[in-house]
Image (cartoon, rainbow, N blue to C red; front, side, top):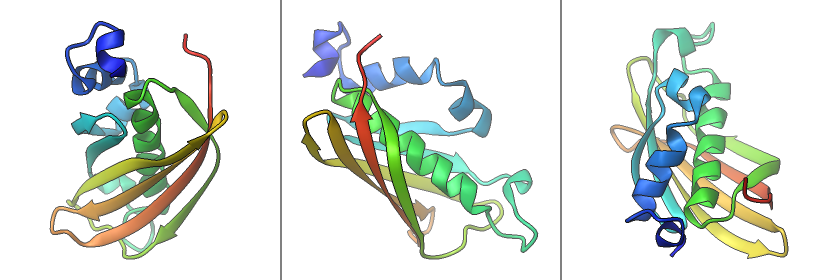
Length: 141
């Protein structure tokens, strides 16, 4: 397990350690909910400043949440990656005051590439978006 190889008691401990350096996620209020090897769930509260002119969550915040989960899924496996291509399918709008949950899983890894799928829902289980990220593994720091 990558976590114990790096001296952490669990994958969740490793992810929380990595999160402590992620200023962008902290600024947006993205939080780690749970983590295990290859699966990570994070949450974010929708703030009024995240709403677009239609009064719904700006899609860029959904995308950012999905991309963040991608990064932590890769970290959970000990294979840091950067996204080289990503796509998002918007299913339903996010609302003011909602709490979003994004769960990601690595689908495959081939050579220096991987694919991670992320599902984003609100606190009521309303399916908001699907994100697929195609990543490239990078050397560990």
